[in-house]
Every structure is written in C-alpha cells, then in structure tokens.
Image (tube, rainbow, N blue to C red):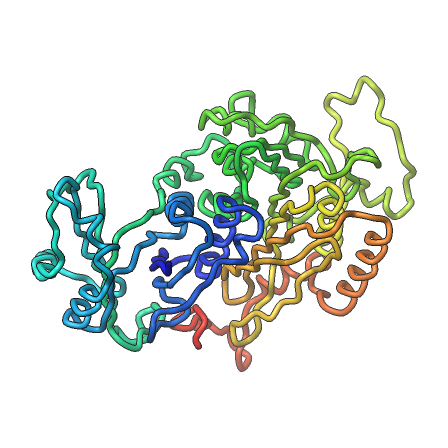
Length: 473
C-alpha cells in the first residue's frame, strides 16, 4: 500500500533517510533499501507531502511514525484532488472494503483539518468537516482519545517568495492516520534544562536523529569516541541501547563541573541506564588491544572540525617535533596529571575514525558522524566524502549552518570485514583524498574560510541569503 507521509518542514535532507533507517530497524536487514518514494503530482521535492511504500506488514507504518522525529504523520490515503469536488470523487472511488472497517457504529472518531503554507479559520474548518457527509461515519465523535483520526490536509498556491518550497497547484488530501511522531520527548531533553552541557553539546533533536540513523535499540552497544557532555549517548540510551564513550579531555569524563554536574548526572536526570564506561582515550591512539574487534553495533559521533572547537591528540608540540622525548608520569602525580596534547587536523581525525570503525564495528554495524562542507559562491555544496573499503555510504544529510558552510550527517554501513590488506587500501585512499580534495581540512583552514568577512566589489556583502534556501528543481 502507498501511504501519504507528511513531514515536519525542517531538516529536509534528513527526512527520507530517517524513515528508511527506521524501516531497517523494525523490519530487518535490507528493508531500508526496499522503501519506495514518489511525489504527489505538482509537488516540489522539498514539500512535506510524500508518498511512500513500506515493506512488511501494516504495523511497520505505525512503528516508523511513532519512533520518528520528522514524520508528522503517516496516513492511509483515501483520496485527493485540487478541489473539494475532486476530493469527493476520489474518496468515493476508494474501495469500501478498506473504508468501512473504520466507520462502524461501535467506533469513535475525530476529524482534523490541517494546512501547509496557509491558515484556515475555525469557521472554514467547520464548513469543511460538514462537507464530508458523503463519508458514512456511523461512530461517535471523541476529541480526546478517538479510535480513528481522519485528516483533511490542504496546501495552496502561495507563490515562491515566502520561504517555503513553491507549489504549482492547490492540493487537498483526505486520509486515516496510521501513526504520528511523538515529539514530546524534545521538550523533556532540551539542552536548556539539562544539568551538564558544553559549548558543543549536540542539540536534542539532532542527537535523536543520529540515534535513529544508528539503529539504537535494546541489546545494542553504541560508542561515541568524542563523547563530550554525552548528548548523543543520552539519546541512544533513551531508545534502550547500552552506551560507552571516550574523550581526550580527562576533565570532561572524570570531573565535569563537580560531583553533581557531569556526564553521569545527565543520565541520572532522565533516569536512564548509565554508560558501561567512560574512557579518557585518544582517537589517534586508541586503547584497544590488537586482537579486539567487532565490539560495537554503532559508532555515533560529532568529530571536532575546528569551527567551534578544534581537535586535539596526545603528544604535545614538543613531543611531536622531537624536542622532548617520551616521559613517564610519577606515581604521586598521576591522579591530577593532565596529559599534554597537540592540534588534530580533520583529515587525520576522520581517517582514524574510519580505521577505528572498520575494526570495532560488527558486520552490518553503522558509523554515523558529521562532516563539514564549504559552500560555493552560489550557496551550493558539492562535497567529496571520505571513503573506506569496509563501508558503504547509505545516506548523506546536509544541514545548512550558514551561507559559508554546512555539515553533512554521513551514515555508513560496514559491509566487509577488517583485514590488513583492507587497512593498506584504506591508507592509500586516505592519502589520495587528503592530497586531491580537502586542503581546507588542515588545522585552521576551515575556521578561516567560515569566519573571514565576505567581500563583493571591495565592500562587505551583507545580503547573502536567498529567499528560499532549499533546492529548486
């Protein structure tokens, strides 16, 4: 069955990949690739209205919608048209054997009139509901807890200069709600009410989206090698996954801002299972013993890329330059010792992350991480993403942060086991990628490109944002 999938109009690139990941989560391996999409007639690709066909049984649509953050609702579409006369004709043509089970006398129902890009007054809504007399509702109205919810959704031709994706022609949909998103968890987990946060703490909505992309669920082990204040692990733990994290800054993972304001207190605040462990570890020199591999079901992280916070690795400038040799910390100073660190370029960081994931992820495990992208003079991005022979890229979701740059959430699936030969090939690909594509990935270059003033004809350019920042087709 084709369903009408109505999205919230935000994070446009993330919408379809989230649904596909949740189909994989609930219906099993390969189900995400079986999801089919098409657009309603005369609708822009950024429209919130999409038609989707899901694999598996009818329960999958409800499961996907209830877990999703960006799906406003999934509906069994009974009819649609450009006018209410066309809508009536379409609904009448919908098979009675599919309609009548939800219109019985012993059921309760509710009708909701919704719109996109326009406002429908209360009087107009009542008139629209009264016009649905051609549908043989026999049950009782229940506005609080109905057995069935029916939606009339309307979008109008409002032009192309109001910040929304252009609509060619007015469309009206009528359908029965199969499932809807539970966004009540976002106010619960919002950062402003969290005990322990930092300048780069991941936004709650994005953290939950990342957890969905990583297929977090009970029985799975999720690892974040740049754990910081633990925002991503909090989202994964909410969905029942076991969690584990690491950070190079011992003060973050051990001390926080005191005994009642640290990573652990965030889990205590939401009554979530605590992480199995938090390590002081360096992504450049991971602590895992050589024979250990295929330990994590997902690695979900936000690597430091030098815009708000730069990456660090062990060693210090003097050690790296050879001015000072390796040293042993005396026993009496180990409790309070903070190891020296040196700058850690994004190119090296991503290479080490891919190497870690190729070893430590189980087959079919997911690597989910953010990758920064510079945008061209026309505001468009044409990135080259890092590759690894162990991984297949299944989703790249862009989030525009400014006219200068954006970040892309990359979702990769492990499709080949780690071997020494694969490690050699990966090293060659990394060297080629670093030399030919991403010179700005080196220390400081990305920060400079993002923050240096924009100049046009010798003067600062203040009007850089287009009317509609989505993708025109």
